[in-house]
Image (cartoon, rainbow, N blue to C red; front, side, top):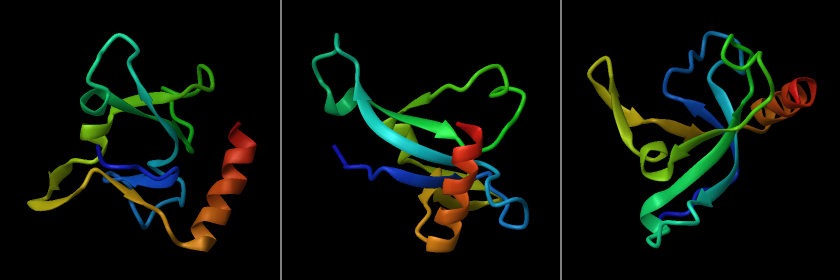
Amino acid sequence: MKDLEKGFYYHYKHDPKGEVNNYAYEVLNVAHHTEIKDWDENAFVIYQPLYESSVYKRGKHWDARPLSMFLEKVVKNGVEMDRFTKITDPKIISELENIKKKLY
């Protein structure tokens, strides 16, 4: 199984011209279903959104997505790209940390 670093990620739908936290998420950990023997094939990424939308206003919660899907490539406007991209810019990370404190 490929390791996944905790931290902040953008979903491929993120608009760099929009707000810094649109389609931004924090990866909290990787989880495994306790009743499935092949953990590597059935790992799930546990993450939380760093933006408000109607889906997330009901309560603060975590999302889960199969690790294989989290790491896969997608095609957008004919261009292949990662579904999620790790955010490494210290300025953006600092902004997202502040947003996270307000949301959670």
